[in-house]
Amino acid sequence: MKSIDTAKLVGIINKFSMDRDWDQFHSIKNLSMALNVEASELTEIFQWMSEEGSNSVAQNPTELQKVKEELADVFVYMLRISSKLNIDLEDAVVSKMLINEKKYPVDLVRSNSKKYDEY
Image 1: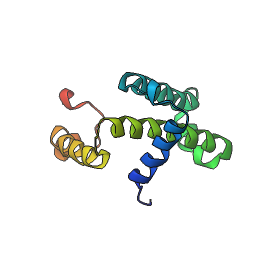
Image 2: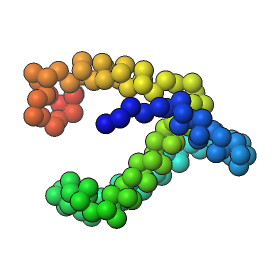
Image 3: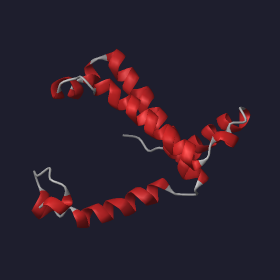
Image 4: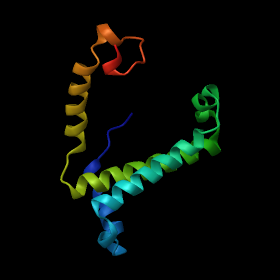
């Protein structure tokens, strides 16, 4: 997987919004709601698929394109929110993974799907 230049993407997204004078509508509340809508649209693609069907979406170009577009929409809203709040997503992910390592110690959770407070 190639590296993502989030600064470049934030610049493209911010310009897109500014050119359309949409910043006035992009409160954190509205952006987080839009993020949830886009995540739901991603979920909708898989809603009635079997596990096997969902795992083989890459073999179906039409479905794969839909997934790409919804993932892009989710990522756009994540970047827009993080940009407006001055959150470095790379740092946030690294920090969260360190927290997750403590919540989910390998020796307790390996091959186990239970939530951290259930084991």
